[in-house]
Image (cartoon, rainbow, N blue to C red; front, side):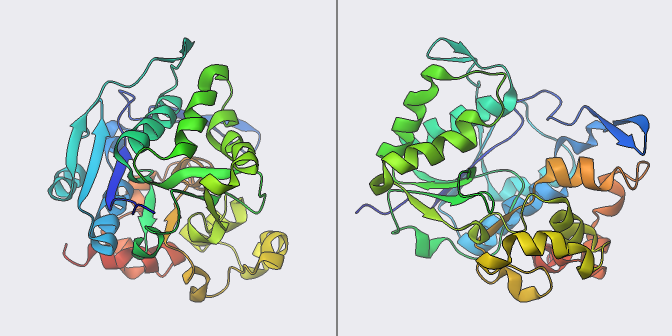
Length: 305
């Protein structure tokens, strides 16, 4: 068995506005539009993704693929750890249009892993410990995205160069529809895994995507703004799989955490703090001094600042 290369791949900046132009939110029954400033071109979350990857994995390379180069303080700090790669994202696959930047990234990550091998991570993934034990664990590795085994998360994937599973997966893009959000990115790999189980190693959700994509989980993780009792719903959903949200030991099994920033930042926090954008509360001082679960995990990657 070949070893998965210790090279990391991150894709970001395919959209000119970096995906943060404006969002519409609802506060109570009143519609409210929140415009996100372009200072979000590269924020502290993106920096932490790169810094945590560098410190925990000591990778041979962190390749950072972009069309539109980010800018700002955190981008300047991150560049010492990465190899920037300017790209032109695909606009079609097998004759099917690919216009959504997230779908372009879905295609690119498969192409990169086939051609180069290594570890793909989203730009909002916080690495907690070395992936070294996984590098000989199969030709292609994914994790469950949730307690629902029918979804595999493409936010973190490990692959040998020229592995068969991502080639089969990419070949299924003959049926791709740009208007459908998760069909080819999350649902399809699960269905393929049921037919090609010998080509993929599937890890449980606590390895890469804990806490889960639940409001209760994310509010607890980032804000610590709800009591443990209010997490009972989510705890009940996952308790049969060994998960609770009440101790630091929750993360002992986690190699990394997908921070779900699209949902966590825009939906879960702005609705409670509509005039308090992420730049105001996700700061170095707050991460160092406020003991939310996220802050306690992230602050070690800011010790040199």
